[in-house]
Length: 201
Image (cartoon, rainbow, N blue to C red):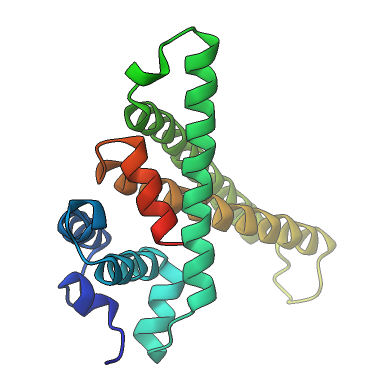
C-alpha cells in the first residue's frame, strides 16, 4: 500500500496547518509505543506530520505525488536538534541554579524556551518582511522609466535578494519552532519525548 500522509492522519488535502497539528496530536497520543501503540504506525504518523508540516515537502507531494524522504528526514532532524538544544539549556540552567534534577519538569522548561524562541523568530520575520517591502518601494521609486539599466536598482535587487533568502530562513525557523511546540505538547515527560524522537529517527 502506498504511503498517504493525509490518510495516515485522517485528513483531506485541504487541511490547514492547524488541523494537521491537531490530527497529529490526537493520533500520536494513542499510537505511541509506550502507551500500547504499534511502533510502525507511530513512525508512519510522525513521517506524515513531518511531510505535511514542511510547506515545501507538502507542496511537492500535493503537486507531483512525490515524497521527498530526505527533505522530510532533514526537517525532522532540525526539529529534534532544536529540542535537544532546548533540553541542554534547561539542564544547564537547572544545574547552575542548584535545582534537584529529578524534580524539574524539563518538558515545561523546554516549552518556555521554544515559545520564547518562536516569539523572537516571528518578530524577526515581521521585521524582515517590512524591510523587503520598504526596499521594493524604494526600488519602484528610483527605477528608470526608459527601461535602461540602473546601477542603483541593480544594487537594491541584490539587497532584496539577500533579504528574501534571510526571510525564507527565518520563516523555516518559525515552522520548525511551531513543530517543536507541537511535539512538546504530546508528551508528559522528557523520557517519553526522547524515546519518541529517537524511535522516529
